[in-house]
Image 1 (cartoon, helix red, strand yellow):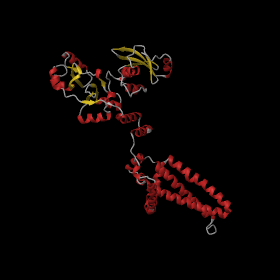
Image 2 (cartoon, one colour):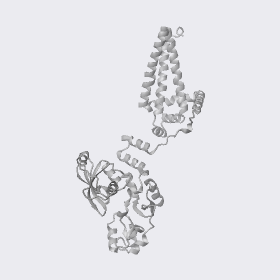
Image 3 (cartoon, helix red, strand yellow):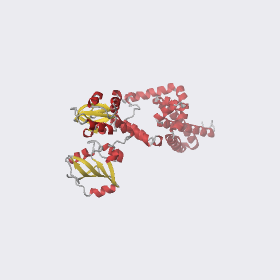
Length: 433
């Protein structure tokens, strides 16, 4: 063969085969490295290369069969030519040198370099390659089909089935990772909102409810003047109506309805009772994602949370759930910002009634949220006793000093968050009450 074909032509043919090998190797990596969701978006936007690539990846076994068929064919052809040239020029020693040289060239220029470039810029390689692979697959389909048939037969004997794959469904944590890795493509504000939406299934109504003892409502046993004063000063449009305490709830009142009976100053208790609607109850532990849908279906905006015995545990509103997504957008007196007062660097005076999740969100802390919902509950659970003022403890590396205890509750506590303050306080911690 070496006598019939010029050496230069054989070397040129080898270079062409190595170029094809690099193309097959790089395009395979590029196609398999494509972000399937970006690819789908580009395809829906009309990008021709993306459409072809998406069509090819819909049957990955055929695409891989085609690429490997071409890649192996050109590699074997190049190896044969190098073997012929090396043997003609240098005999057995030349054959050994030629084989080693070809292996090094293929490894660097036909495998590592093109695959690395394709992994770094998959779309720049994959989309042009799709224009070649799409018609090539149709031409070589019988050969590719036969190859895949035998390969799938081997996999079948090994107990592997196509139906065993899980598909492209993403878990919530995987979606969180995608959102976080979006970088500057999505603003920080929108990223936080998207992550909050994903977290709605993990947060329950218990985490955001107004506790039983803090529910503000209309007590029909109170003096009518006190009721009018309460309604006049209320920042809410809906209030629960009860007798003596919230456990004897009568219903819910939309304050705007009072405008039909003389406004917020000219009405009687009978008018209030006539305007109330039946209370809406939900069980404790209901995930916010479910409760949001239930509010929409029932066309309600406020619900009373009950335990397994039917006792009222708290109150949740639609606004409470929306604030879990978009953050605080009201200026109510119960805002967590008003329950945390900065005293010095790393030292904060926190109300015992403050919600732990809200504290963590505002202060970027990591107090435990898998137990009690308030700081008071967290301290009582940790100490298993009602502490006196001055008691010091350490919860998850956060030194806490009890400032005020009243009516069997921790009213306020001082929390040290900075490492400097933590080290100072750590030496004098007293875990006993």
